[in-house]
Image (cartoon, rainbow, N blue to C red; front, side, top):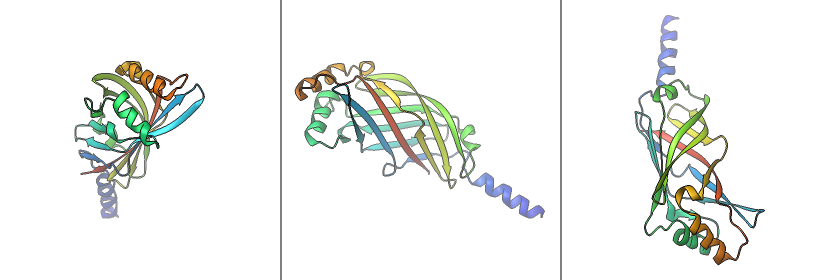
Length: 192
């Protein structure tokens, strides 16, 4: 009986690497945002090029390839790359944060926890603090699934993007495009 208990304890401890580094699985991760135009028309868009990870000390870094913006309309994608994000100068955005690895280590296989993560979004030459309420799930001990519990609202004026939004509004002949953009994400990290 004693050896069975020992095996169970070792299995539980091994189910989640306490000092692991994690790589973002770009194929299974998504970052979406909602644009609101003409007051009442909301459209969901995404970025398809995501990379990054979290090191053993809990430092998270995620790179968003801005050229990968996907709105479902090619000309709008091109306009967003050129007129809004200015990808000739600013090729990517980054999200950075610090997460306590000891907190993550308490999460057993199949368990879920809610966290508030303070991070920094660097976009268009500007860096601003953002807070995200997330749900973290330990899947099988070697995979972390981190999802936004509620949208993170990014304001264009914080990143000096209001001129780009206005240029998009004018070229599309719209009465308005909101400067506040709700962002949602599902990030899958695999232990490396």
